[in-house]
Image 1 (cartoon, helix red, strand yellow):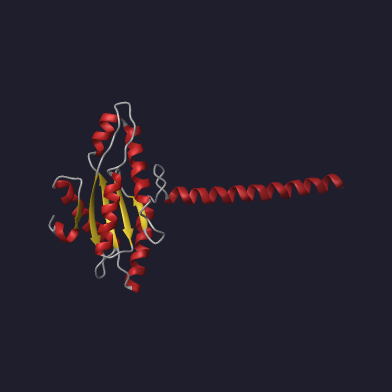
Image 2 (image 1 turned 90 degrees about the vertical axis):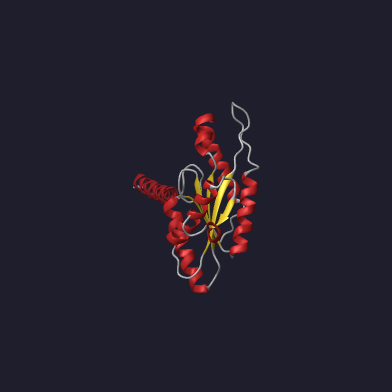
Length: 199
């Protein structure tokens, strides 16, 4: 009878342990599903989900919002010359630098290969100011490689929420400004209004 009690206690303990392990695994799986595996920030899907929620809230409360679309300049050359490991380090370093400018209310994610998006609770001037700080700090990144130190710059497109835009429309405007920034020499920040709607 005592042996049966011990077995029952052991079994209950094992069930509790296994339940905790399953819960931890579920949490890990949820984090992995929402996170870019390389940089640890939001992946594309999560960025869009969180950004859509923030935009709805901003429209309801009439809070200004701005978005930065950022692309590492000549990223393919970094991979071609220094290898994908250095390219990965460049992406991680860029994510870390941008993350230093992210507040709890902001939404930050990697939405493409070397492309990042940051949705900020700020007006036009505030959004441009954040873009300038991010741009400056990315230019300070130095990565060691077998061929010597690697540094790089970024191009940034900026757009601000006006009226009833959704996240797709807002990002399209920032992407249009980013494209114009890259087309006119890279290593610069352009606002959608100055880039022109046809850019």
